[in-house]
Image (tube, rainbow, N blue to C red; front, side, top):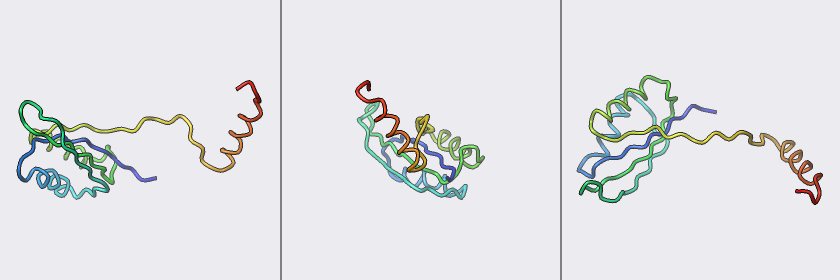
Length: 110
């Protein structure tokens, strides 16, 4: 499993803002594996966009933190997005069979 970091970036709608964001990643030679954008409602009378980017790199890598700080310095709102911890996820068909047998073995008491 590869290390990946997801950032949420909110920006004011202005010419060249996407290029500004992408250039920050390019300067640090970071590979983006996914980018998604959506318009937000008007905030403080100005139209804004939210970008979600996935970076093919761990948060602990100093380059990711440099980009984070640079985007904040440029006046953008930047948040690290996390995925919720899943306490258990079946890793094999055996795990699924075992869960099924356990549930079916309880009978009507479920």
